[in-house]
Length: 374
Image (cartoon, rainbow, N blue to C red):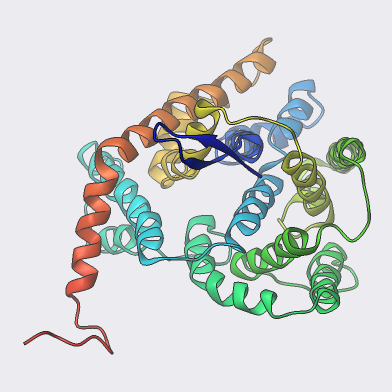
């Protein structure tokens, strides 16, 4: 997954090839498109007009958010199962979350969209709040578990590792996709652990069944088509049975990250992208490295969601546009580009200073086992 190039001194310098960074970009675009639909008033418009052609388009356009989360964590598991978590890496993650939380709290507070209260201040300063369905909170906690998960999977035999991955899929994915027969509740931290177990098995031992690169491409396409078909069929049933009052969820088979179609699409596409022959492209890698920042910016808070999707983009207001099929993707690309530029600038000019300050604060804390010099 990496290629070597020569640096100016003649030594070998390891650089990351761009296949999984491109995958990371596509994944984030899927998540932004999902937020276009579910974080705006357009979702209500779709429910009120279930038979409109634009309703079907919007549902398909925004169907891939939970699948995208799986893709994102598969990449993390693939790289981190052979890496180590340092204090510096963790501080980079947490300070990035704090930076955007504090900056947008101040901006929206000054604009009157988010009042300066003690409760809001505490919520902004707490990096971990909702581990059930909040991606950022769960990802931070999952990050802390990675060193222990790595030790665990490295000490499993190949057979034990495969059996563990299979058991997790049986319980959490198959069971989680059969609500009439099995009741399964999975929070994001547990689910990310399952994805790590699967990704680490593939990294250490390869996929247990031989499938060609072209085969993974066809399987990805098949899984995408099945997912899209499930959305269309479920939405058609919803429209025939009285709209939202019917209790039918068009996204049923992909509504949670552990659902079977969300898992198969993510797994097949990950397997295809990880073996994609793509050289190191600096722009792709820079944009790929900014994807977590893109998420933190555009999904920062309820105030951001209201300002972005309803006030600025006006998703619901453009629902009847004849060129909605161009407008919605254009908005997603623009949001990604602007947010990525902001995060790249933060990394270039602010990250080292902020992380360095946080590191000095941590080093100054009287933590257990740390001896003070006399």
